[in-house]
Length: 311
Ligand code: ADP
Image 1: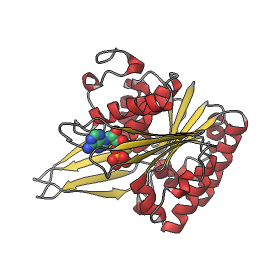
Image 2 (image 1 turned 180 degrees about the horizontal axis):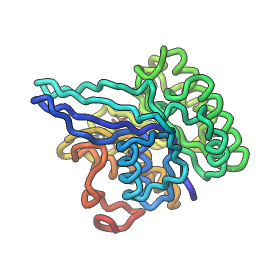
Image 3 (image 1 turned 60 degrees about the vertical axis):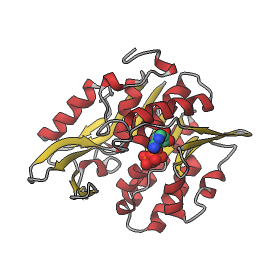
Image 4 (image 1 turned 135 degrees about the vertical axis):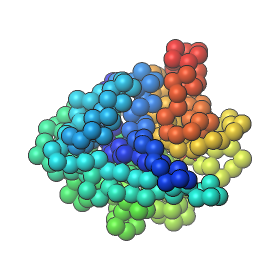
């Protein structure tokens, strides 16, 4: 099984109270690719970066995590996107972006796009998020949709995580339409009820549930005492609750790691309900640590990787 994750990773700067900045990297589909790789899945990240030192550092970091780099495009004279995280005195974080001109946005329009598309069609599973969709503009999204159709015609499958960030879109109508089109192509749908309500108005889940029976659906809801994943496939409709987490430190990448563990577990042959339990276990560990990427030693024991860290 070969998986491709499509999207954008950005340079992340965290501003400290004295104004100094600490550099990291961040991106939703990259987080998913990283956790897939840690769980033993053969995964390539599919994006475009520049030829600058930060792009070099990203690729080196991804390579160290075992993420495949063969489908990374390097665009001369271009740069990755960048964002700064500010934390106000009350501890509230805000995100500020410089990403309109990021190399990743040209994945489906740069000179090598035809080769990228041909390569994508050959994967077993292509994972894309709502944030990925927001990057490419109408023409790029049309190219992506054609590529996903060709992939499915060859027996490949599409996994779609409905991450919705309003600021990535010119308006909500454009986002709704793009999500609708991709939901219709998705064989595996990861969605959060909150995202869908935000995007479509309540109950936003109807937009996803109309694909019930055709697609496998994992709906996350966080409003109750513990988050619940509702798993729907065929006739089945089962709620799988998360175990309570003693101390939630940072929820960055909770949804991304959830999707990665679910997908890895399904690839390993677990049934959807068991895959959702694995997904909760990984996400529960991820939110117990700062940042999107937890130390390797903190990876929880999962059924699919045996007992203990790094088994
Ligand atoms: P996102 O905000 O990234 O969409 P969610 O809030 O949907 O993330 O959470 C994703 C997953 O992270 C949940 O399904 C659950 O597995 C885990 N999680 C998040 N918050 C908690 C919590 N308070 N207790 C236990 N697990 C949690």
